Length: 492
View 1 (tube, one colour):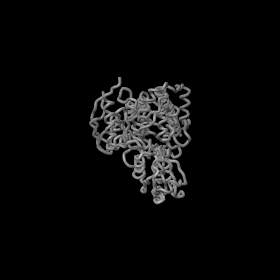
View 2 (cartoon, one colour):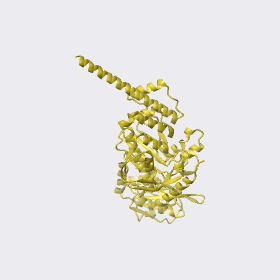
View 3 (cartoon, one colour):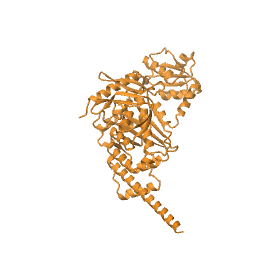
View 4 (cartoon, helix red, strand yellow):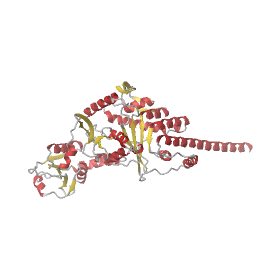
């Protein structure tokens, strides 16, 4: 009986010590969250001791405060990578990734946008590459916390997604986070040898990494995430490796070994505190921590907006700055509608596949009539429909009244709504106004061909489809040249 009493007391003491240890660790964890908030986000008021104790109690109850600006279905987090102060292109966001969290299914998806995507700068009347928008915001914003606003508006325009949170991490922070986690593991798909990797003090060095399983420290992980000269897919291959590093970092971060190693946590917070900008508060970090326990992070969806093949949503073009051409990426359909579809359906990409299958089954005959006054536009639209959207039956019908131009592009259903998927896609992609009665003047010229759908191209299509089309090789060479210039232009 005496032994039993001793065992009961021992068990009770172990339970008490465990609880005290958990509360102590929780207090430390939240204290570091609070310290991190004070360093990273100067717009948040520091928590006092009572607030911290309250937060510990909240965390102990396994509840979390509600995250902001969400509809209860999805959270979208913008992840940006910059070089950092004193480095070439220090505030250019050469990594642009959106982490999507489905709150209903607990799925996670990553969507990467290329740095050379050509976009309109909000409220400015001019256009530039998307990686320069954040720097532009820093230059023009009266308050530093508002510098992100132009980029958030741009991301909304490109993807149709509302961004609920953002994080900007620089190179030093990236390396220190990886090192604080003890390195990360990746499966390198091919041998990498880059003799022109940017080195210290505006120099070049060689980056060499063999194919196969690799354990990377912070410095090597950064090189793996940045290297593109020896990647046949260039920037698009780099985006895939960045997503790979992010997933590996996530696995390491949420491992039991890391979360309950107080020294690793301390290093992690030190690394983040000096090198990250974000609008996530310490309380919201607690909520994200709780949310992470539910997420299916073993089956992350990865998608890249690129220009690599005929199925890609972008194409290479160029604009001139004075007499110097600048190679850019633009939507292949002349607008961002395809990227909108990808972003909105990223958790069910089969939906996009099923729609293409339905279009293929319809096998519609599409007739094109040029009322724009530009002979090149109709050729480019026919190529888009044939080669990219894979319409097999696209014909050009000469217009005898070619001087009678139209301002707006219209699409006519001349087959009583029997080809709805094709009609909807053409109307959305071009875009075009939809009509279900074909005017008599077009009935006459299309009578012999008897098309299912008639697309009458107006003047409004000229600006969307008159951009020159270049090659991936042109883009890669221009990127190499720009990287070289960045290396020469040392900041003061």
